[in-house]
Image (cartoon, rainbow, N blue to C red; front, side):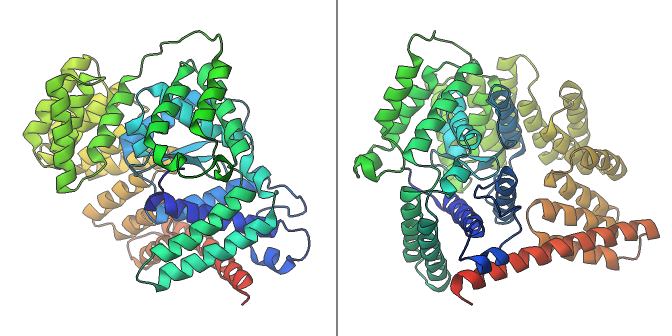
Length: 508
């Protein structure tokens, strides 16, 4: 079992609360009041948690996670993660859910599957993996939980255990809210979670074994070396030895790592060794996340020292990645000259255009107050990589730095039409409208930014500001009114669900 950090703890809180709501809603008799008070998750006549119900649960968890800032919104890293995830999806068995991958800035070695196909990956996991195959083995394992419908299957095993865990969770939330020492509250929540996990939650030992086997198949079919899974487990065993040695096997919700290694080795059998080279982007993103893992003054000093030591000793898998990592650190330290020098070294080593390095060059030019150069670099980058979402955002930032607000607005309006789920684009659009003094359009764009970041109430407030602005025509105001009514109805449903769920559980 991993040490659980605060970002992941918040995810567990949300996942537990939403899943227990679904469990209560699925009680066939004796909980009619509870079922009436819960979100409308679909047909309650079935004893199974349907794919639609799971997806709605996952979407609500993700909405709250985004609102709390738990989702790490780094454009380059998120783009890499989802592009890599697509490779695995193409070679995965049929799934009851579509997949969506997201990052959590957390140094612990972990990944997790939420209801509905949402898969979180800690930045610490990517940094710690030695090869792209190891990363594929972990992501494939989490995809296995979704493909095998583990959450829905486990939800039916013991609803009584869920009710006990729910009571413990609520007591924990109350303790954390009212006490100056949140550790006691966390302990209560963990006790409830552990009880439920050990008795009926999806991620049991059997489920873990099953997910290992599905992940192994995805790994192999994607062309990665099957031994990558055992090599990662070996690293994991060293990292978590203190936790594994602290409790007997029958008390664990995961199989012993040594047992999992043996199981996968049996599956490898006579499989041929495969040497799939890591992508350049994998090594660059590992370096980027290492540089950004701790952006305090001391954290940046430590990262800089580590990269400099690697460059001096030659102890690295990619020399270009070391120089890029240094460039990222130096840019954070506002050493633009040093950042550019290290970026030039990385680019010279790769000898070909790379969207991650091109993004870094654009950012350096913007911060050096060279907007025309930034636009020129961004234009060239988008010619090479027209599908890159991160580069699209940096192109808009370059136009903004150059004061080309009309060009930026035209570009971003096209982008948000094609890609409606990217809050970064709406935030940039709002800034462009603000620069032009178009208050109504600014608030309208901010509303969509807040909505996509999970804050429905803030989105409503921005639309109300937009409605009061006087520079809109009848058609624009009608659009705002329609969107405002839509979000107000959604917000009322959210508040109703939360209030009635609390009354039901607390006996109000």
